[in-house]
Image (cartoon, rainbow over all chains, first blue to last red; front, side, top):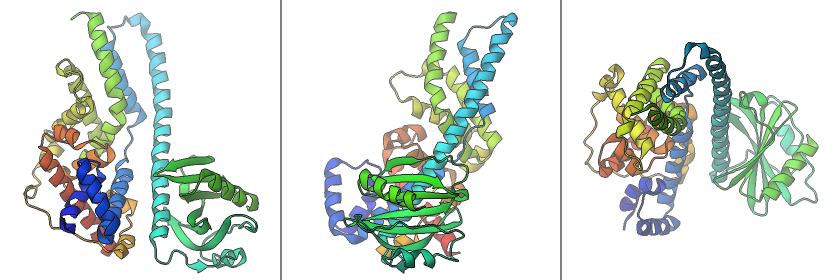
Length: 250
Length: 175
């Protein structure tokens, strides 16, 4: 089958709706066809972008409470008027829980979007033919290169005797804020370290986080007004080691 | 129906429907593009669904049922009637393939804000099917039952909607 036939099936494939025989054949084709593989990657990025852009609106806590109340009212037989106190108390409790839940949900949503954006940045670096703007294994070259390009400074660890090498760095942007992206190599894998000012991730209560998404591991923490993200397809152990080296030098 | 029996029925409606509230609201807000209209739409959906819950077939897809009620309610609203007049291209015409070189991918890195704007500007039939597929992660079967269209139309409309979105994002990147 020619590419034309496959291109028509790519969307169905990424939606997980292709028959298993077709799916096997398509995978086989993607291994050998750069154009279709590139198309697949773009479609995947579009899918992810819609996913995170689409989760956008959260109901107002008061509105949520109203709906819950309506349903609860329908579920229970009519109350006598002297029972008003427990009703009010439960409404208040519902409001408090709803408000907390909405905040929690909003945070989760922002967190998911942010993770997605950072993954995109990392994947774009991997796919790029010139992934770094300053090519150097020397931390004393890389760090000064950022001076004047980003509105903060940071320290880089000494990597002697560790499995990590510094490949270089580039300026990256998150929510219109400039930051540093450092690329490290460990056993043929590339790991991106993003450093942004905390206000670039404002509104999200990031604590020390480690999570896995699409088989990429992520570590994240805040220090001295800067937020660090370590992203790569290496073992959690390697991510932890690199994170500790960075924390040690900050 | 006595009180305790009604209690049981409503209780299970509450259990089924409340977890969907956030997502239904998100979907409603995207459709109406207005907070208070979205709230009215969700409230009416819950009221209709509660009233019609006796006719809901247990074991069939409750989520698709709720989305169908919400969408039908939207289509009969003032904003919905306006949006329904957007003409769709013929659904059965085959799509020309677009090919991409690896270099074009980086140029096409999708900006959240651009995607939001593009989604906002898409005609409702495209916007809703993308949301059901990508955000709600519904299967084609569920989408078919929510929108009351055949599976073949689900696939062709999705493919058109994605193309329209990509073109809109590219257009905004160029300008």
